[in-house]
Image (cartoon, rainbow, N blue to C red; front, side):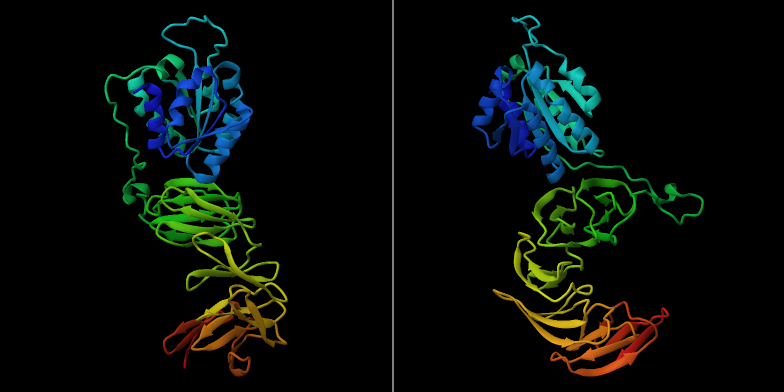
Length: 428
């Protein structure tokens, strides 16, 4: 086995599935080893493009993107992309070639000290000087690139080291989760034992969520963060855009994050972006579950349902105005009230249909709630009205001040939040 084969195996061990590169004489051994591997070699016209593609790959997936160039001028073309990744906290691995370091038959032709050049622009820059050290060096590079704060790491692989024949099997280093030491709560605040931790995450843009023992925070800088709820230590951070809706759990270890232009499936363990699609519209209401779909309303007057796995739109229907908060689901039917005071019944299908139930002459100020088969609507006049599915009013309760929160259904009635901050318990 050549050292270049071991190098490519080490990249496969880290989960690398593609490398953006400009081939050259000094990395031909690596290119040949890639030919028989599972890694896709993406050829580009300029090294700077390869660096930007790798940095963006790291930003979107949370896993280090990889780019490769030759020595001298080719390697120097990577520096702008390295600076871009360093400033933007994007995990990235830069691989460059170099002339033989054991014997320099071409003297100093095109030789530039790339390791020294990259040091101010990366988290680490080092030259591989021994084939046996490749698994350790590669594992350490990926660990550094992924650890907070993420960023670029540079590896230089000289051509004589890449072509070296190994006389023994060199084991790979298994990737392992990053273990961050956590202090005992009493050590964090010995004065009163009340506050366990304090951390600045910026202005928060959505309600907090605790999923799989990870505290999820979205801020107004467009960052999505995963924190240890016991210590406040940041596990990971991703740049997603500003979210206005709290993340919701999907399947095991994955949440849905909604921004004005994108939908993300993000792993809670490491913050990796499992899937990103363009948002079907500016979603303005929290998602609700309807069997195996998620339903929400948009600012452009749509009610739509998406598949939680692929994030593709299953159906959508247009109403007369944007919805007031979240729609409500009863079986296979969606009920939605718009800002014009119109109550709709939405029937999913291909195509979906929206049936106008009733046009109200008073403004709705609370989300639609289904309680024991009745549709409950809270108004600006402090009144909760219960409607039959056909729009006929069944009964009403007058409280004080506008109703802004929906009732909480119970087995034998409901609890209502009044305008003065008091709670009202009603029986059926």
